[in-house]
Length: 592
Ligand code: NDP
Ligand code: OXD
Image 1: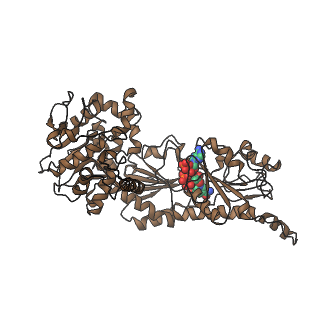
Image 2: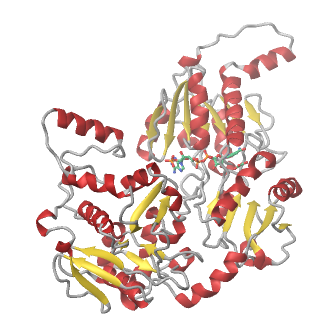
Image 3: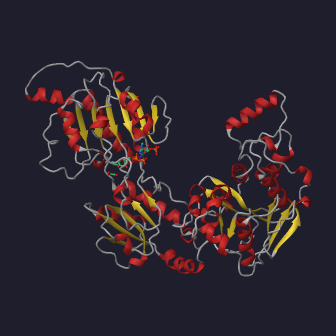
């Protein structure tokens, strides 16, 4: 925010073409409303510029004859990058894109005004640089040099352009790959010049990430939820939202912006900000676990925080973070200032199907300790079946000395359903052991030596080449009950193990246990290793307990170890409070 005595600087924007349209007009008006002067540099004369916005001749900065469109897309965006760098070189101080909404006036401070849009990327939608900044020289050179090949372009693009140049081609900024002059370039030059340290946390200018911009078109989304105490502006990612303008839903933030001039209900923000920002306490609610085991390392790592263990809640308004495993019903309704939920397990099915979830990020466990444990379990189970250990155990009990035929690992086709953090690590290990490994996931996954299948259309082909099926899927609406007789029948019948084997450590809800038993009876499955069950603990009467060819473990494949996981959780909370983005946040729509 512009400091008490600092005058509020003018911000400068560019418009090429006819009218601004309702989003750009409302965004520029939001600055004027908050007392921040705006000069709009134009090559034409838009008729809908909001009152209070000063129009200026853009040709005074860069001549009209030098305006260009990007050849591949027809867009003026690359020229707009050039314009802002040139404008700043001329000492205009502060630039804004026309799709930036003002929350509070933006001050110039020491002249460096920019922010992280993602952990590795500084955006240029809000940009202030001193006229003599060393960062501006290479940025402007991109537009003024013939056939520029800059070190920040993706490597492949550099190679392609260098080859073209060697072959005699001459190119300019209009021919560059998309993105070569924006955030990628800015991040590179600021980092190289040692200036990236001035970049503000993402929530100062980019509180709504690009990937979530669609939410601005949804009536269910309240943009106020994204505004933090230090948010100055909201970049609305016009390239993403403009597609939705033709059929705009009433009540969505963009509809509100266009019809009322405000993106969210400001009265609401005022109240929420104070109480939210003070909520720093941590509540641990882990049903069936030893909660004290988690509390002790948290107290040691964050002694200044209040830690409460369910069923105690204490001052519910002071709880900012809930660390949970299968938390009790309605817990979240009792926590008005919750800022983030941390699942103490990698799976989040214990959360996503609830109806009391607040609109805060849900972070899941991703940790080398947990991954390693799962890879150990999967490898052990694959080898148990591959090396026929159950048969040798039975022989030992009979004191029988008999060697069985042993296929090579390379002749055994392992298929892994779920190629996420755990699936990929297990796949790499099994491939190293020599198994013929493939994976199946929603999207393709590239791992050396592992074949990739994805989506429902490739499931059949994946199953048809699978002797040992390892399941590391999350439980979602789409995956529930996926492991049924219909699927088992599609597994390979011609494998060297004499029949397919099922290994499931994902979730019990993925499997139809009646079908597993029936498939084992009918020889559709030759064996199974199960760590997870429809009902846990596995009821004593389950037929799975007593079968020689079924290995049962009590949901222990990869237990969450407090000592290993707590430091990462505390680090994340601290970074979040410094304004950094949380990592391993689940995608609620996908359910994992
Ligand atoms: P990730 O979220 O990293 O990976 C999930 C994988 O499943 C991704 O590859 C994803 O595809 C794929 N997937 C999800 N939905 C579908 C679908 N409909 N069709 C095809 N593929 C799909 O999770 P993790 O690897 O960290 O963990 C996986 C699961 O393991 C957890 O959800 C949990 O249930 C279980 N688990 C069990 C433990 C135990 O002790 N038994 C311990 C820890 C975890 P894409 O890559 O395309 O997104
Ligand atoms: C988990 C689990 O999801 O232990 O981490 O099942």
